[in-house]
Length: 333
Picture 1 (cartoon, rainbow, N blue to C red):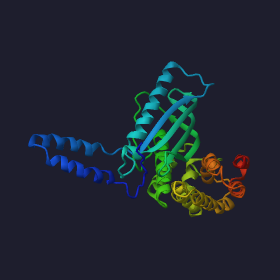
Picture 2 (picture 1 turned 90 degrees about the vertical axis):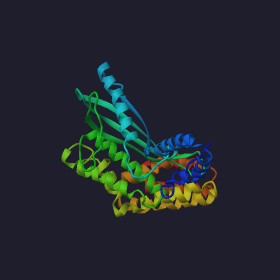
Picture 3 (picture 1 turned 180 degrees about the vertical axis):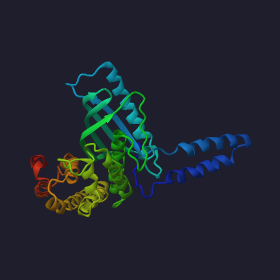
Picture 4 (picture 1 turned 180 degrees about the horizontal axis):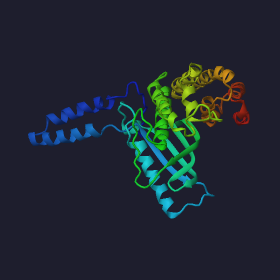
């Protein structure tokens, strides 16, 4: 099985450099007509060698208590396809991704209410993952449930993202998370490499301020919304989290194949950077999302560590996220 490691700094055109000598040799040995056919073939290869950035799977479900008519069920089925096409067909960056390099992610929209025909309210769970170097393992990069989703949708609705413009809520919500996923992924590959995509996500929030729709505002009762998710990310106070994301992955997870003990130490040191944020901003949505996404992973990675190493890790996680202390205690079991 071919394993592809997405390194956004060096990946562009590398695979073309590898196959080009083969094509040149093949081309030199063909007749004029064959060369024409071969040129046409190579043209199409060059056109379709690259893919869009996301490999996004989409599900749309409704709350079991919600009565949904057959017509509404058809609309929900179409909604799933429309969201799928929007996430997977929109070109989000200027970078070139091969099919294998696309970022795997999942979106589940749960419809909890239909307050009026064509208007839907519910939640959205967004997940993305990142491959570990020289491994078949994928680590959870982002996992968040957005509790405030409301939008109109009708048959044959078309979602088109327009930068610097708020067209409708569902398009803006999806575009926001597309850029946030990209930002998290690029940050894990190079230090603060996700900055352009976080800035784009922040601009989407700014464009949505005039909509007065929940999830975009700073003055909402809950701090677990899109506004605070991106605002925190770009604050100087949260720079240790972005450093943690990079070091945890590049100096930790990606090095496990070479030196497991050293990699685990680097992962612990990376997590320790979050202590500063926890002390200044306890219960931050950003830190909680990151740490909870890694709990099961850390338990598996530290299963054969010494009791002292496990205890130090558990104490650190409890300090960072005390509300979920019982979850971290399981690492000792």
